[in-house]
Image 1 (tube, rainbow, N blue to C red):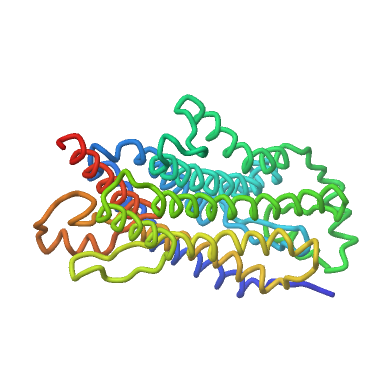
Image 2 (image 1 turned 180 degrees about the horizontal axis):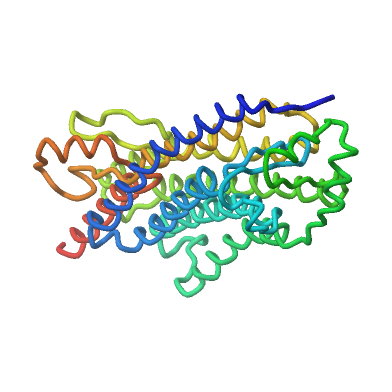
Length: 358
């Protein structure tokens, strides 16, 4: 079965990709501005995690849409790129430059889970069996980061044999000789070790998604059973956690849009990545479907950029009056976890202050 991606289709694909990039960049700038300038003092701990997530999103967008500009042929275990880094004059190792997006996505996933872990630890009471001592938290963060990034980094460092790649192209049942004229390319053989790597990637994605669910489930459990906080505070925190899970934007009032946080990362990142890496194993994803999965990942960055740190006038920053321009900018902004986390932290902070005064 021949597989061919025409130059006209390729140009349309990159046009869509560049439009998405043009939309996401201003949102990244808004997000970073809010995180750096508008974060209240009691949010300084979570801000570092959110800055890391936002920085990785920006680097991923820039690398994929400008520097690399790849076309991934996942079912054929092949890809090529036409960006500046793929210039034949640079002669960079193709397996490294094309594997960098995998490393960035893995780092983004681990950073997001670490951020949720931070929030879960902040809510968990000191008596909880899941409360980890402060000195061990960096070790857990390192373990979570290594869980996601060790495999892609190791895979990236495997020596790449160009002669074997030429042989694989010539002997491919998909008639892939046309990619030689497109740019720098990488092709892998259907070996057992490669299949094992792809299956392991699926296991890691499922594990990461399960950790998300587990962290949020424990938050609900703590809110349901803990008696140290007032009923009103527990209701407000529970409402914020609901927002983090639903990931659907709605108007809280006419002043600002409230971000809701979990379904979009799962739908637009975990599921497409899982499908992409599973496709060569089960032969269940066509070439067109793989292109569609990549566009889903691009749209995920728009949603994440769109959600970049919403300044909630009442609960997050304790401001009661906003001018018209600030209200308008608030509608344009939100962030992956920040608004809901800000609301949770503010309510916890207020509850602790009230307890101290009492």
